Amino acid sequence: MIFVTFVSDGTYAYIPVNAHLTGSMAGAMLTIEPIDKVLFSVDDLASALTRAKDRGNPTVPIPEKYDPKTDVLLKATGAKSWKAIARNGPAYSLEWSDSGEVTLYLSELDKQGRYASGIGETKHYPADTPMHDIAQAIVEDARSKYGEANNP
Image (cartoon, rainbow, N blue to C red):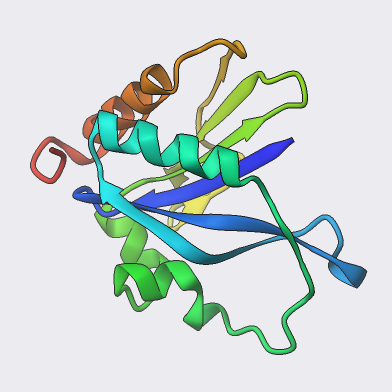
């Protein structure tokens, strides 16, 4: 299984490496650098998602110190909080099963305006779905939620 998650501010998509943690946190994931920053357009997003899928999910040790306020996505976007990121654009996750099928998790905001898991729509794609088609669905979803203004 390969898992990719990313955020967008409407102009750019920020796609980090999603790493598996070892030890007592085995099974948990952490976003790490490098972060692929690309225009939030269908073609650029499709290329970046292909690179992220090809990178896969490395395994890393549990960080000695972790402060959510210094998360690599906050640093990359320049946002001071996750709520600030959520105000400006969506978050998405993609999961490729061992058979290659793709699940796309579309973000939704909770009542406090934060990204929330388990309440957004989920879409499923067969293994042979072109990445361009998945990127198109993501860009269309973002435009439906945040409008055209910041989306190339």
